[in-house]
Image 1 (cartoon, one colour):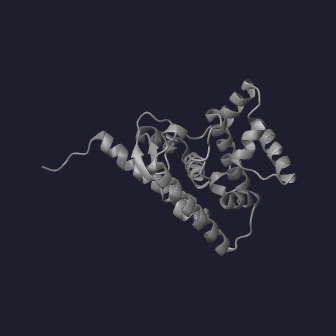
Image 2 (tube, one colour):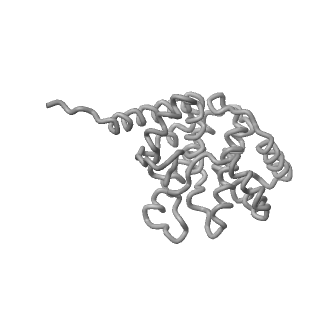
Image 3 (cartoon, helix red, strand yellow):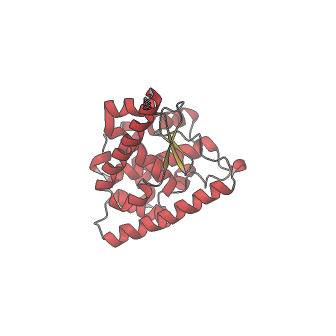
Length: 228
């Protein structure tokens, strides 16, 4: 007797097709990110309402993913790129003993700033007032030649009032960080994932340099972080 596909099996099949579509759309405009975009393996987690990763898997709730794709497919491309950039920049593994919530916020701001400055058609969005204010502060840092990274942003915001941090968290939240390894829980698998992404970051940098594309502001920021 032929197997009759269940609803959950159909959802997982559709999820895989949607993620492949999202990767392809990003690749068409950001070809130097090909290796990074294809690295994460899809894994189901029905409790999620956003993408999540541990550096090896892309965790997603199939029902949520299908619903978002039907309403706003472009959002998924930006959200997926956000998660991938966390891995490229090693955000999951370099938090150290910093305050975890503040570090996660700093990482989200760093990634969102990079994406917004890149001005890729597939990830464009209108800047809110809160976002614009933060970006103006970051540009001041750049003018002072202090560079822009999650570590720099962490130092900028670590003493902010709680109310301001909550406002920033609401603005820059994009993906779920529940699978990021805690400092006390790091193990060989975590280290292997980090080494793999370090390799991907180097290859991405070389790929971008070999293409010799004209560098936009956001891509310059990306290039600097890849060298970090």
